[in-house]
Length: 108
Picture: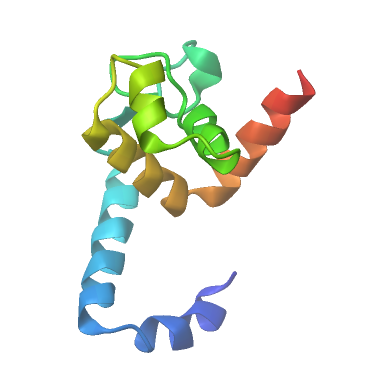
């Protein structure tokens, strides 16, 4: 999508949505996502929950097949509800990255 295509959609946002979009863009520019990290050589350098080897794409894929947040927290006792919130925000900001990771890992 180009900026020209995106412009009318951005202008149609509410003030609160615009503030969220600005925050999201600023966060993506700084390449730091609270609670999410990419470490070269760890989990294929995929985005993971900080200080774990739990990739965001695994959580997204689990949610798609119907696993609830409560079940994820039970299945992954080292993560918190805040970690899931961070994962969902990251996945929403980078849907193509997550889709590619899911496809790549389904092929393996």
